[in-house]
Length: 112
Image 1: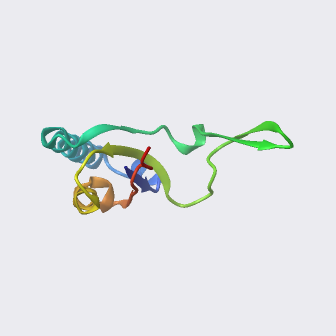
Image 2: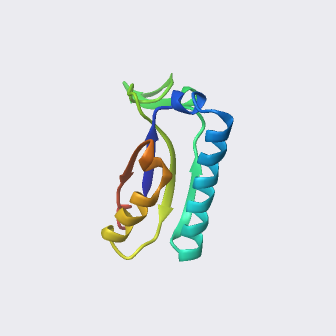
């Protein structure tokens, strides 16, 4: 799984032309993943302010507004890939537009 982290406020600072360019880059990247047969899923996430965090406390669920972590960069989207090995996943991560304005965390799905 490729998890894309970036500063949410950065999108708002872009010009319309820069936003259009960024969306075109993601569209081209997604198309390349599909053409390669590597794409299994993915999506952009709503802003972190829409998140809710659930944990159990004293046996009862506690629901908190907001993301779990207070960090500068937030999880903004993900791609679920099926590739032959970690080296291939890292090559795809390096091509991800998110690597240019944030970070892309690459993590295997736990085998079942």
